Image 1 (cartoon, helix red, strand yellow):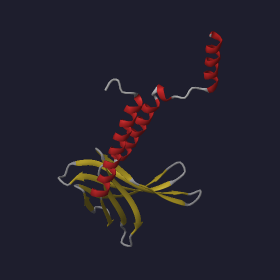
Image 2 (tube, rainbow, N blue to C red; image 1 turned 135 degrees about the vertical axis):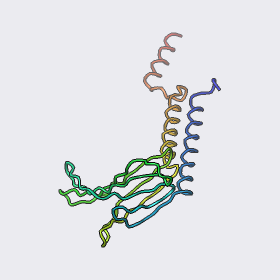
Image 3 (cartoon, rainbow, N blue to C red; image 1 turned 60 degrees about the vertical axis):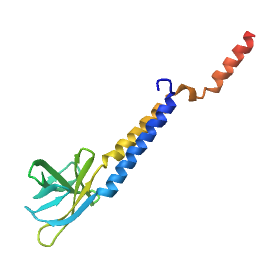
Image 4 (spheres, one colour; image 1 turned 90 degrees about the vertical axis):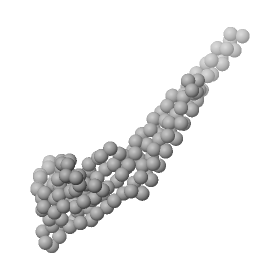
Length: 177
């Protein structure tokens, strides 16, 4: 293996990265979960072994926006506290442009997303919760592919010499004869 050129190692690494990316895509497409639920303060929703409790809304002013944050406490179904996730709806007053900022929590190669929707008539808010298993493998695979490309480019055998440098060498070789 030590005698293999860098381009071969780069090719193998890039193909490994492709395999990791495909594994991530298959994992997400096969095992993802989603819930859309209207929640009021104190309500709980469960998805993929996690429990989200809606703690309420708070308003925060940023440098050029105002946002209404939804605060959720996150636990395992068994009751282990995992902290909180905050999702927000931002308004940029200069353009009256609303955006939604998802709350994201990463667990190994998987992620849990929480996004706020519209207010309901009874004082609640619509919440979308997504579970994306193995989603980070998609990004890791892309980085491994990039690394393979870089390793491949480091192979000196594949570099093309500049025409002027080659011409000088040819002239020097001709003058020496």
